[in-house]
Length: 238
Image (cartoon, rainbow, N blue to C red; front, side, top):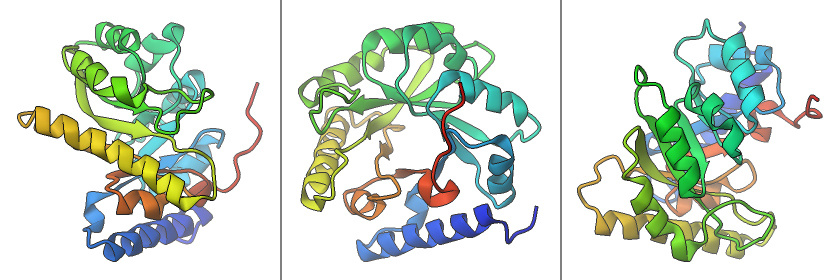
């Protein structure tokens, strides 16, 4: 795959954008992981991104995720992240297939993932999703219940609890978005203060193509970018 592929060019631009955002707030760009959100895009585009050095890919739909894992099974170093809402009847597919789940919003889902995680695989890396915008249409634990949920999920033996995830309100009001990111960071810090022995509590999954600069300024350690890398998403397959 040519280093000048559209995916390679987009990844280079995106990494530079992350670096600029980090320098603006005095952070090291190595502190921020780029997750390429590949939902809706065909496997050959993921191959092109992989050839350009991208390794972490995020998917939103369980069956699409599992299908792509099969298609790209020869790329053994891909790290698959599931970032979409997860229904009870899809937990086994995900527990058996991916390295990370960012979107746990209730204990029952965490417990199912823990029980269904194969023993021969490393513990599933997970984040708790928090509904920082308070929108009824959004998944995620209410902020006032998030720490209790985190502490309950920490007891699930086949899960490795890593941090928090949020999807802020879709608005051009940067002040509002920053406040929502700041709320997630405050919850993250509160957990760290209560559990200083949690050495793997290290992930703030927040920031997308439109708002990564604000997310990084508020402490994001992982940004989930789709449009910036792959462009507009094609219509979902049926």
